[in-house]
Image (cartoon, rainbow, N blue to C red; front, side, top):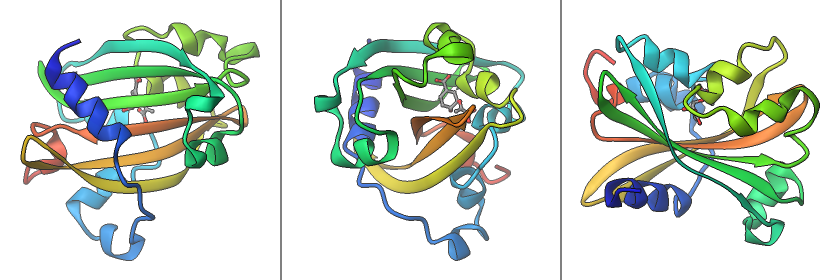
Length: 178
Ligand SMILES: C=C(O[C@@H]1C=C(C(=O)O)C=C[C@H]1O)C(=O)O
């Protein structure tokens, strides 16, 4: 994995998540992105011709490797970690790290472990019962740049996963018309 991507994933893992100030954020361009409750994939697709997913890593972590906060959001069990970068028309726009508890990867959700280059949101939001909660936001500094990040819990068939997303410098969220 490139140093560039390592840097961003590390920054994402060290983010200090906070409850968003909904009232303020909802009125801003950034807020429309950070508070997106439906699919981020769909929102990104609306700003490019081709959205590509590159899987940077896919590995298991033990319950002992989860933070207290992650355990409280997901329950006490080992998880599959999926790390990706999403690119719009060849520009890297978003790094994401998703924790999927082993008990989520059961029954109809077993395929989530093998998504590959299929965007997670495309898979999750094709089900009517998909929902997102526990949205938190953070600002992280990478190589002197202040970047926006968010973390949220996705539910599919009432089974959770925790999605952290870091908006990279070229992401549409930072562009005027975004
Ligand atoms: C969860 C979503 O899926 C997007 C794609 C991801 C992936 O492919 O791993 C991870 C986070 C999201 O940016 C979404 O579209 O909301």
